[in-house]
Image (tube, rainbow, N blue to C red; front, side, top):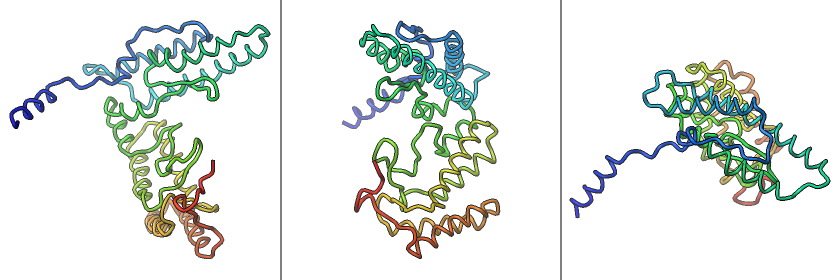
Length: 282
């Protein structure tokens, strides 16, 4: 039995790693089909984006683009598709002979066909209309980039379009806060690390936005909806307060966190628990 187990282990060790799906997609045939009018400028942008992914995936490539720059390009494609969807929606509103089957065609294009050749993208049409970069794929692809890419993704700072890591999602647009579970001071330290060691404007922007998002929760003037134990909120805020006291640049934020603590103590601000009673909205 031991020899059989060892053999299986050796086989897995020598098997080639599963290629990144975005790498396969970057070299797939391009077919825009019919149903949506894709401007030539967007097609050129997509081909440039595909080329960036091919360079990222080339293990022998010497001039690899930053994954941050590739993500910026992906957001430009996303913006283009918002305009494309608006134009399509306007066209069907003014078409007295509109064929409803065209909606099915567009749905298939953006949810199935286009993601087959546009790396790290997903889409939908209907109640939600989007053709957007998959943050999950970008995050999993961090090792393909340079040292700054790896540092950013190791810091667990969310990218544009990603749900906040300190929130447990309970509905489409919100959830409860993970007091007693989330490392708030660790997150602030990660932001500092990125800001001090990363040069990419895209990553610095994401880090600053995340910092603002953290303080919107830690220095809130509204009732708190925590996921589990209400008693965990104040200890977490005290830990954050103690950390901020050591960082002069956070003087204004320190005051906000202290005001939150004071409001809790005075009863002006209430702490509710999702575990005890649904408080996260939706």
